[in-house]
Image (cartoon, rainbow, N blue to C red):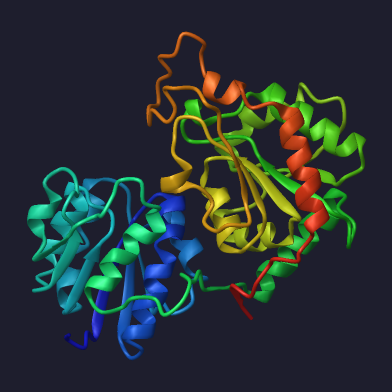
Length: 350
């Protein structure tokens, strides 16, 4: 097996997929400890990768086709001897080819013709394989199989911890106060548990004094968060739009647990080993659920789920999610909070 010295990982998006690829980075770093590893990523997610342990360079991509094409001269000048395309789309495959690298690896089932840009194609054993394990198939192909459980190696800057502590205290979360994060939005409308269900759950958690409820999300999640708050009888803490993506690891490490739809923050929480309660409808937890055995995932037995569709065609709209009872979710919150931090491990590099 060649001793690769300059490695490029192409995984520009989305947030959850980037987190899924962190164990592949860790495996590559263990196998090639002296290699210089670069990661090509969309600029909006570059800050998240700045905390990734074992990465030498984060190379941001500007939006649009020209943003991709402008990369070519600089990438060719890097003289990579291994390019790994985990995105598997035409643009990522084309960029892999345009680097001029002689060893370009991607998946055999990559879309949009990108597989024809690779010199080595990796077969995926089954579609019902978690994304973390699927990406690790590529690491295995270059002799970088993990020696143990997949690792999400992340360095939390002390400044990030301090900023989150200041934000929480200024919002009413006293030091030592148990609180749970709620992420009530998702990129697809069909992934969203109904706002009245989130509201009922949040009210029950606070009425029983189990924990404080902190609503999180980006500026684009404002409408979804407001829909929940308007249906609540108790007052949550609303941090929507107040934390950038790169601060999410520090924020979610501070939470007792995260209650969420299938979303990017769900994967960050799981990577930081914060307990997750996840609500799945049109997507499959086998493929993109919170990674690890200590989390709770709720699905329904609706025959059409998972449909992997952004449009619900069921006679009862979003039945796969509306069928998940808030009372059972509250009970799961109660059980997870009782467990406390007993199962947390050291995934955070101090």
